Length: 599
Image (cartoon, rainbow, N blue to C red; front, side, top):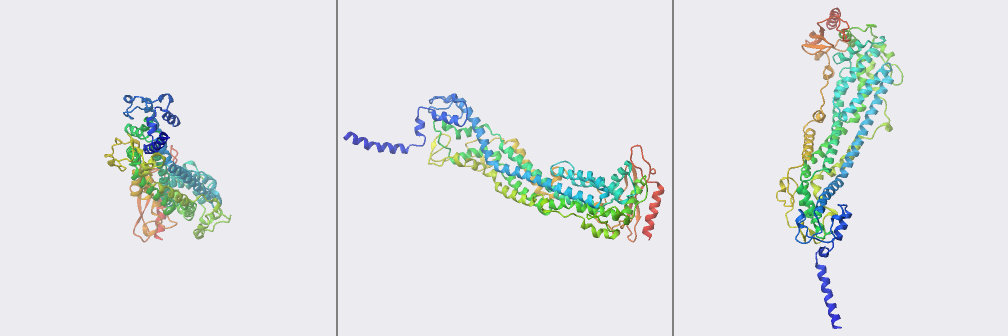
């Protein structure tokens, strides 16, 4: 009975002692490596035969997990641990960046669909203009119209060229149809040489007045913003992809192995790293990634600037849907200035082969109709009716609002502004680190990690004893430079110049169209009078040389330049181009201009 009573008194003491042992104490003293083998198998680290059944003395073969006591690790296990931590760290980063990648990819597709829908809608809107109001040239305008909208679509998504070049190319291509079908409908068919001359001389003849240049300027601002957004989203996806496949140094991998798996070598498969110890390891390993923090913050700000411009100050939807109205204004300008345009064309390209006559403006009403099918009013009433032509749009036809897409996209992206600065902390949160009274510090089980915790950044890593910071990843450096360049362009330049800096937006053709409306006081011819544009000194036109000659305008004392020919009379050369007008025609035109001025 006394012996039994003594045993009862001893039992509580062992319970107290057992409760005071550190976590994993019994597994540490276990003569078996069964738990280590189980963890090795569950995490698919390597072959089970590499794990010994009982602890051994393989310390001399280990380069990372060295410990004085018997170990359950071998050199092959250590090599497998290095591959495992590389894979697991990449998977962790991918999990943390998955939401950003999802929003960028999803909204890139949403923006692309919206751009394409808007462009298709604007194309249909513009095509209907020719089919209802200018049926005489509708068939011939189909090709140039489709090509124009294809050009601006490709421009948004990064193709070479410029908006102005696309606009000027469109007007060059439709000018022969406007000249033949609307201004001179008596001509049955233009020769190829005469048609080519019309295209090449369109910028100088300026049949569409200031409207073609106005269209180019309006579209350039909004399309440049859309192009910049497209480039920004591609850049953002590139940054995330490089982040998800970042390379790690040898020292970093060894530090991660010490943090994650060296405890297994002692049989401690359930102990977790200390939180601050994890931060020091990961901040050293992620040093290249955290260097992207400020460029990434600036990138989010730049995204907001671009979306605000595209869906705000230079509304892409408004500008695309306004193409029809501006093209209509261009053609009305040509109709109102038919005699001047025909006279100028006859001077530069010669008269068409079939006839050198044209129908007066009053006769054009039979060839130009409103969407209702009624003939347009002649002469002065044209300008009063031109605003009635844009077709009514229906709500069901409109694509999803760019403003709504932009607002939703930026609300998501703003949440990830500090993604790179918080990446080490996010990595070490959750089930990875211990929240109990003991944790793993890379060498042993401790109550707390006592070393100093460093901040993010290259310069702050010097006191970090857990990992050695070496040369940064060259891919991270490259993408960092891309981010910085993009941010400098967006934040340092006007938004309409963004694509010129990033992708190359060439300068288009220059003519009087760039100057807008022009009157007698500016030294230009009035409405209905000859208006010819030529550069100062000597210009090349269709292979012929022209020289500027000043002509006095009525009451202004200024001169307007008229290009006169110094070479051969009108003929078709062996290259198929149309030669200049004869000297006789030039003299008649010159006398006609003088008579207009004197009257």
